[in-house]
Amino acid sequence: MLGRHYALTFGLFELYDIEAVYACGESLAERGLDGSSLATAATVLAPAELRQQLAVFNVRLSF
Image 1 (cartoon, helix red, strand yellow):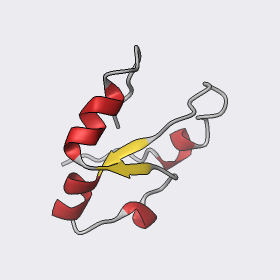
Image 2: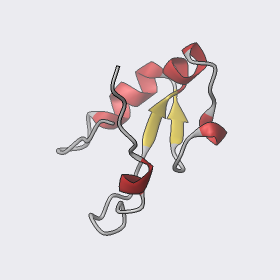
Image 3: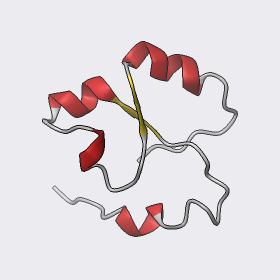
Image 4: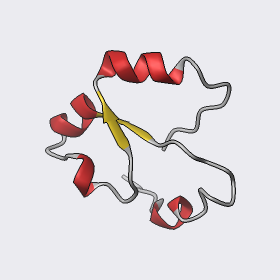
């Protein structure tokens, strides 16, 4: 399985005016991860909170 290395992309968030980064806490837990193990700072939310937060944005990027 080919994987992509996105860590370099995260350094460009400021260039593209990306101000908010969110992660699903349940998905992280399923993989044995937590917010501190992410390559970039993110607000970790429960699935329902994440859906509610994402509903307010016109543009969403998923990695």
